[in-house]
Amino acid sequence: MQYFTFYELEYSEAAISAGIKNAPNPDQERNLRLLVEFVLDPARELLGLPIIVTSGFRNPKVNALVGGVKNSQHMLGEAADITAGSKTNNRELFYIIEEQGNFDQLIACNDYEFLHVSYALNKTNRKEALFKTKKKKTATKPKIKKSLMLAFLLLAGTICHAQQFAPADTIFDFDLYRSCYSYQQASPSYVVYRLYQPKAVVKRDNLRFIEMPGFPHFDYKGTPYDRGHLCPAADCAASLAEMGMTFYYVNALPQHYRLNRGAWKRYENVVRNAAQLDSLLVICGGANWGEVEDLVPGLCWKIVYSMTDTIPIMSLSFTNCSEPVVSECDTLRSLFPYYKMLAIWKGGNQ
Image (cartoon, rainbow, N blue to C red; front, side):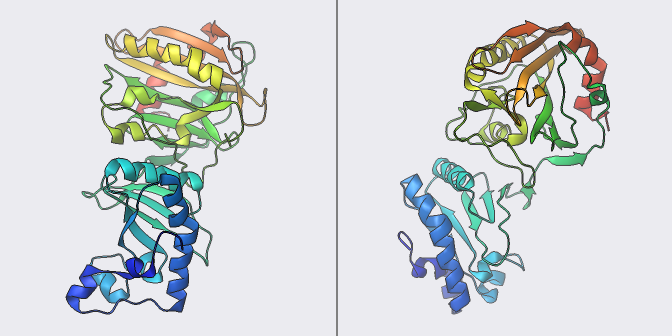
């Protein structure tokens, strides 16, 4: 253990005040060591800042005293509550641990007031990253609905020069957007969201993408592909909590960096400016999967409707390559009419 000691992992003010001895047995001490070696020490090295353990090992009496859950991993020596001194640092620490992926459960508590992290030796680590609020006392997650067939994707024949869509089988219902995810392509088939006068209050510094447990995603490392937002972070910038909801892999497609940072970004700005004057309904996704390589769409597309006039103001396809080509695609408008998009946004496609 490079940066942590058993003393700080066992220390409990509550135990001292109550006169309770809080000492781990050999198995629990081994678990604490593994937690440090596999999670805490690597995170401390990458963060470059001190990490304070606010609660480590708890025996059953101490756990009950502080209001811990009955099956708390703290009692096994598998968990610790930690802070890097500020919410900003804790947010960075959260994404460092999440990116490393060597943990059982990682929870950002009370808007990053502190983090709870665990590592399990005798079971498969879940790699479960969650957010927890003080008010609800429960992890906040999007509502997930299974859909055997999404009605309009049954029409996934040929459009706009034979664009092929991936079948969506799971819906992630966020407050800000609805993601229709495809296990087949390990990506969202499409995302729907409403946009009206977006406010840029916060910046996206230090935010990183989070995996939904049990839902695979494209491996971006060593590829020319960016994690391309479908519902843009800049359109949900009223607060860090709101923006953070856009940083799930179920809201991203592998987009060539020249597309993501070029034409796709330019048209995001066009839509954002249009939303200052009108309420818009936006749907965007990928097509022609596997045309370039496995789990990568050959095309990305975007349709935008005015919710005032219920007419399309944009219907575009983008080639997903090093030299992107943007094209008008009228067929998209006929395949995704306004009433159908509105039903999907409101959940009427279930």
